[in-house]
Amino acid sequence: MRKTKRVTIADIASLAGVSKATASLVLNGRGKELRVAKETRERVLMLAREHHYQASIHARLLRDNRSHTLGLVVPEITNYGFAVFSHALENLCREAGLQLLISCTDENAGQERVVVDNLVARQVDGLIVASSMLSDSDYVKLSEQLPIVLFDRYVDDTQLPLVVTEAVTPTADLVERLARTNPDEIYFIGGQPRLSPTKDRLAGFMQGLERAGVTPRPEWIIHGNYHPSSGYEMFAALCARLGRPPKAIFTAACGLMEGVLRYMSQHHLLDSDIRVASFDDHYLYDSLSIDIDTVKQDIPRLAQECFSLVTSLIAGEEPDLTRRFLSATLCLRHCEPS
Image 1 (cartoon, rainbow, N blue to C red):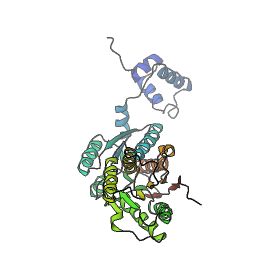
Image 2: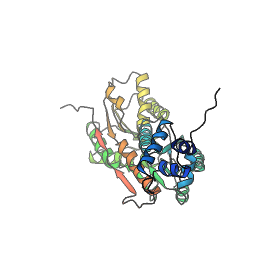
Image 3: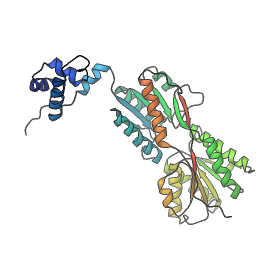
Image 4: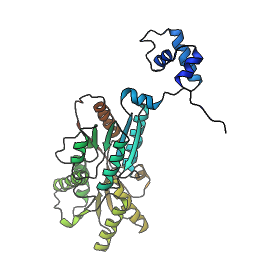
């Protein structure tokens, strides 16, 4: 097998008939600034293109003391919302000439510490994190070494930069609509009770009931975790306890709704009159026989704001706003009877 040889600056310099120093200036974009003749610059660049010259990433790292890599930490990459976010962020990184390393924690704080340590060991320039931890102390300490931006989840009173969707108001708007037509029974199916998404969405749920004049019952509030299997188990247990399906439910995330829908499909409930609503939307909801009203996050904008914030911090800039709360919209599929 023929051994391939990487094209170097020395090779381009030899082909162009110039010194290695001159070729280096041109290929690093400083030829015009340092008055290398236009004809020489064009010849060097043409030969570099013809021979598919690529600058050494290691030389680039040594030159500017950066890895040009971001780290993303999410609880679960198969979650639809996190998958869309990851895809959008990866596109932004690629367009900016950056690499994105993605690590999953499986909603496990111990595993989160391990994956964060691994990303730091790879010398990422900044981290974007949806944390499963109940304290930000580890990240506060780490932020002394590199920029960290929290998203989707945050710890109360954190001073770290963050980007999240404001959940209380749109959840209250959606649940109020649900409660006015189903005042006698609405269940909340949520994740871990101490995580900020659960707390904010539950606060919106309670506010929506209050607006509709509905008094909540303690048994209406059910907590598990954000895995689809947890949504399935909570809904199955609820149906078993009631001896029938509930009249109305609100799930706190798309993953939980996934589990609920799997149970409903298995037990032929998709054509029933259960009212279902959820935080987070999914394009497949438009294809189902059951109408699901949702709070829809602007996930591409969430990714854009996180990217903008972390890259500004990496560049040493002081962003105008380091705590960004984005608005959401309601996606209403169920038509109320007139």
